[in-house]
Image (tube, rainbow, N blue to C red; front, top):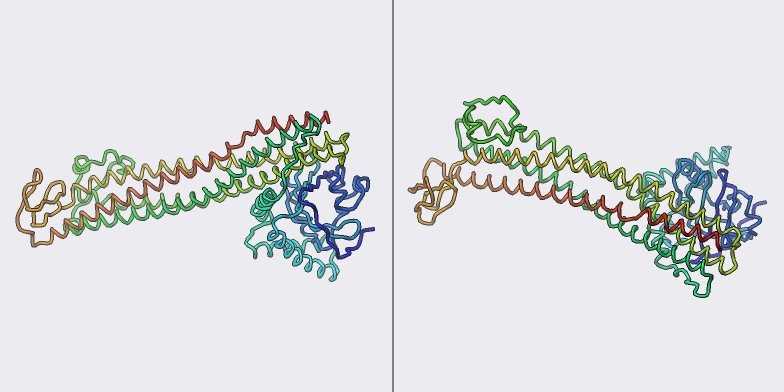
Amino acid sequence: MSPTPSGLFHDVPIEDLFFSTTDAKGVIDEANEVFARNSRYERSELLGAPHNIIRHPDMPGAVFKATWDLLGAGHPVCAYVKNLARDGSTYWAFATIVPIAGRFLSVRATPCDRTARDLFESLYATVREAEIAARDAGASAREAADVGSEVLGKALAENGFGSYTELQRDLVPVEVTAREQVCPPLPQLPDGSKTARKILAQVTAARSSLGAFATDIADSLTLTDTLSRDLRRLGAALAGLDRAVASAAQTLTAATPAMATGSTMVTYASDPVADSADMTVGAVGAVGTVEADVAALVPIIQSRLGSLRDDVERAGDELASVVRARKHLALGSAIARMQAEAIGRYVVAVEAGAEDPRVSERALSSLSTALLAILDADLLTDREATTAYVDRVARLATEVAGARETTVAWRSLLESTMPRAATNDGSVTDDGSVTDDGSEAGNGSVTGDRPEDGSDDHSDAAHESRLAFDVALSAANDQMGRVADAVGAVAATNAALDRDELAAVLGKIVELAAKI
């Protein structure tokens, strides 16, 4: 018979880590002393019992439904769980559950992020109320859980989460980090057995590696924010370049009346954008007036820039898949850190006589296997997502370089058509430089009174449009460089964890466990 809640609560000591495994149906086949002590059951009572022996009536069926759905799909599950001890007292635990070879392994601890725990408690109350109302209306337990699942989904959305998995990705790394900040370190056991000290040394190495990896992951997620911003800025820079092209063309039109009347038509035997390296004044001028050639290329260049902006926007959207994979890797890393700590705490308990050394090999093997399994899956998913995105950005960089080559060639044509810049007293120079007194500044410079036909105004406008064009072109080029640097930094994080070295450490732990 299930115990009745007494209304009393008991706290789980910060250094306590529950450890248990179940079969595919949720029947307990391994349980440590911490689990027995905090649940107020004898270990013999736990072994062979369903794990819901400690289920609290305040816990919604929808949460357990989500748990089994995720585990059945091969995904880890983490949650703040309200448990009921045999004596009727209530205790909270932060639980992590991972699938391992047809079984499930759970490591649990006292919650350290009170804000997150309170959020879960509020969600549970809302969902449980809906489930109780459904049961009162005649629904079965399964039907009530389905009702609760709908309410849970809506409640998650109201709190900014698209799914329970999203909730885990955001909250679990924070919870584990909070634990690491307040939890006392593992004892060194100077008087312990040689084997135990060796295992603790390996655990320390594993936790150090995983901790550094977690920091790298957190830094890379900050970099994805930077990358997202740089992609938006690249799109804005390309839009600015588009406007600069239009402005320069408009200035040329104003300076060349013949173009405004459309008196010259130009046709191309090949795509001038594709053959931008051949867009010289001599080559194009052979077909028609240079001014007309420049004007004819404007819509082609703008079309290419527009298409490129669309590609940049898509790259920004596709970044979301990289962030999801990286956050899932952060989730797996957090769970792995708790499992690594559990290995150390278990060894300490064996040395203290609280755990049976005869079953320690199996327990430590289960923990080590689960730790590596979850990391392997998440590392692979993250590597595939990141590699695909690096290739995506590389193609984008090639497109930007091509657009830059085209616009630079177009600018060369534009330069040959622009009115030469006037000096302060009316003199002009071939290179656009200005003299103070109107004296010669180079071949072709002339002096005299400022013209009265407005050409001087056109000259100033031409100079300003060229300057604006050059600034826009430089901005687009610089932003593409920033995007490439950011995505490279994000991609480098996956290699920050030496998986084979970690596997060797865990293998050594299992090997040593057989000697305890």
